[in-house]
Length: 374
Image 1 (cartoon, helix red, strand yellow):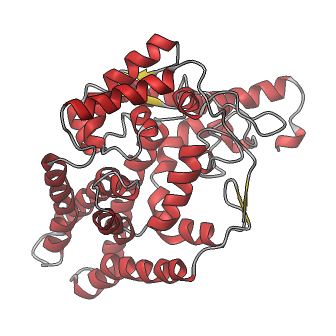
Image 2: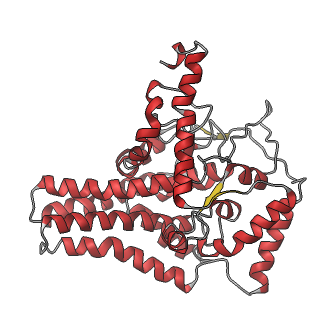
Image 3: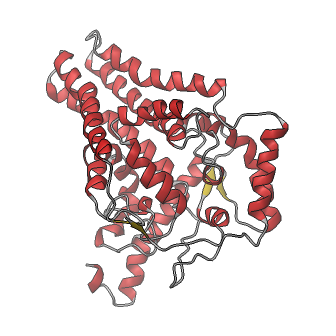
């Protein structure tokens, strides 16, 4: 197995990396605080699991009319997204607990929801977090051929309309994930920077076993227990995934595909210009830092800058350390990209969809170079 020869300078000549790591370390040490989950985080875990599986259990009682059952499905979708944001994500980063067994157990919630935690740690923890916004390597820039999320991606005729259908397309993300995405990545020989990537036999077994568990509780059991036509179940199942997919897809795009973050490229020898921590500042954005409710639900992923710099720190601490990170960035002239509200971030993302879609198409048409894009 080989990886792409992309390297970052060992030393940050701006001084930012050394100071921000020192000051954040002092924040925790001076308060004798753990970097891991707090009691409030554990309480949130219980609430989000309940938001998903209490409606599921109520639906299985067959005591509610179809419209109420549809409401249960939507609530489950909200819960599924919340579990992914605020439980699985922290656990798979090793940030939830100092005990690896606790992280492994809570990371299993990802598999329970139909996704594969092992593959997520490769594509997200390793590839995305290391090579953020580097085209041809960062898998998060190639979520679907229907979407062009970076300036160097192939330009297709359909991208002329992506600012109109982009948000809706994200709704399909979890359906694709549970039925195709993980299988696609397991069978893919070259993955991000990896060439001829091979997976342990145990992970192949876990892939199929965990998928069967998910299909069992989410599809087989309801079809056997619910006293409704199959098509009504199908509507509820799709509604659950459209809800979860829309929330997950939009939130994750607001961190990197908005105005501000850059797409740095390595030189001919694979060397990046800036140190890794500075690279993360250049390619990542926060949004709605003052919204406590949003921060609670999305597991601090509106503090993507802090998450990318300190991925093994539990998300409950991001609001507190964000002031330190921002002050350090301003001191050393390092970018600190942010949008003040959720809606401002969504509008900024739509602008980027227009920039990389219809605007890029118009520019190519003006240059008379459409043949390669059709």
